[in-house]
Image (spheres, rainbow, N blue to C red):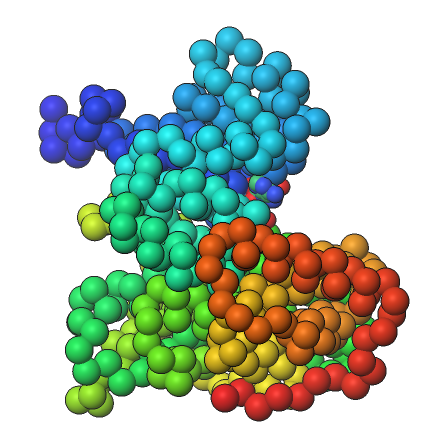
Length: 410
Ligand code: NDP
């Protein structure tokens, strides 16, 4: 057998990494399964979960044969159980079953559930999973200090999957934290980068989710269109890397080739470049601290021609300033920012509010954020629920401020 054939030959199960994928039916989840499919000799799938896409979950179970699968919607449990009958695996439904999937001892848990719903599974996975490959950013925004403290005390490594944070994580690992002068998060600018406010006021959900570079789930696509995604990422960077927020800049880079940059005191800047394909970043987390080959298209600089950069326009995209405000205020404010945003994005996607109303709802709710520190996860859950109630009442009453917000990007 030649060397390539040896490396392709299946390794014994105990030598393969055990991986659970939470949110296996979504955009990041499917990209993860693609990598697991291509590297079946290196990984064993322990658990898979989904929200409501039971057909997608059943198909993944037939292909990857996990020991356990869970669907968040309890009404779909019978369909799941019947769909995997004969596969010698266990199934469950509802939030407790998602947490049960997260609690299975594995080498790596990929957290690709969207939104605040990932928080409890993340808390459940800490200590059970050697590595948490974190795509979900909303949980870090809401409960970052609790997640990082618990990860440290229970010995779980947090490896970011979000492209900008994966880039910074890799750059800081290579070049160190000493004499870091600035961190740069790049932003594509989203589908409305060049749109006027008048056009954005009429934007439809279909237009908002049509991202120019990335193929992502609906919620993060809308976040990208408002640039709240970058606001959430500023807070995520604070949680993961702990540099003062004044040291973190956002630069619009429409080609989405550079994902993050770190500037050092000697004037040098290191950048992480890769095509806009999440499989590069997921592969890094799956194999960390090793490397996994991917089929991602390689960069062709002659074809690229040029890379361009812009300063974010804070008058058309006030979300960045709102996120900086929330981070500065601290306490409940980041949780309020996230919950108001999730509620408003859901309402926008359902056609109940306009595109510009999303950041108006966030700004209004942020102005009402209660003072005080969040001591435990139950405090975070309570603030989240209360904010969603207030956001629903605000949107139902149609009492949104009429003028678009305009904040400086601090
Ligand atoms: P998707 O909407 O494509 O997928 C979300 C996944 O979560 C699906 O499997 C979905 O199940 C599941 N899910 C939804 N609601 C629940 C719930 N209440 N309980 C349990 N599972 C649930 O999202 P993305 O893959 O785009 O994003 C996932 C996360 O990764 C987000 O936090 C996002 O910000 C982050 N991220 C995504 C990137 C991307 O390129 N997509 C890039 C960087 C970060 P079902 O399919 O059944 O609805």
